[in-house]
Length: 252
Image 1 (cartoon, rainbow, N blue to C red):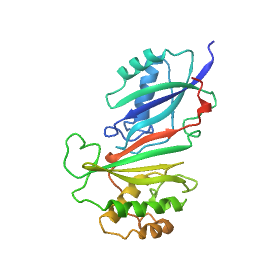
Image 2: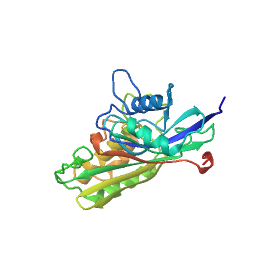
Image 3: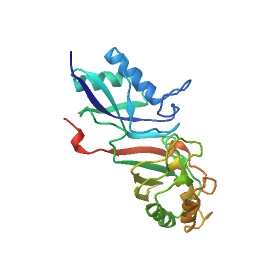
Image 4: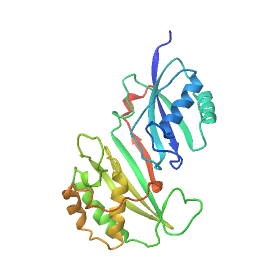
């Protein structure tokens, strides 16, 4: 019998049609689609473990999951076939053999997101950006975003009904990038809470539009109260964009 091996899949998806990543009853999810496609390809039930959840409507330019399979995989053949099985909103971008102990969730040491805000109606970005008719002050928002690096408890930006043991996260970087016709918010941390990035973006936009002072960011974080922070930005503008792992877990 062939030895069971573990593989990492790198994938991307458009979040609009899905009720998030994680399998749930009576809902169409990304995980369900991938497990179904893998089970069809390998002709046996395959389950996957993702690097983390994304909420309903959230996109990913890079997500990672792992699965186990006893046998060799012809990578080129596999990628052609699996992408033919999956719906158009999901793409498998790569597959790598990893150590049997490697874990898509627990071995990730950082994760990055970006959020897109646009200021003019654009039919090509309608489902992939937040349209704002008012332009915020980027310098003020970046000043306020610096406060994120000074704290490690972000309960104020977490969904209130969530099963976590703690609200501590280490944010490595957070800044706004101004591009022609749009703003991108980039943030990297060791972990994120449910709804955290969208709540941060919504709060920073309120600061940038003069509805709050930039100094209020510290007070919001220290309050640990979700009701004190700003309204969450729409899910459609959010993208999981990077997950980093130690190179030693890879076998190819």
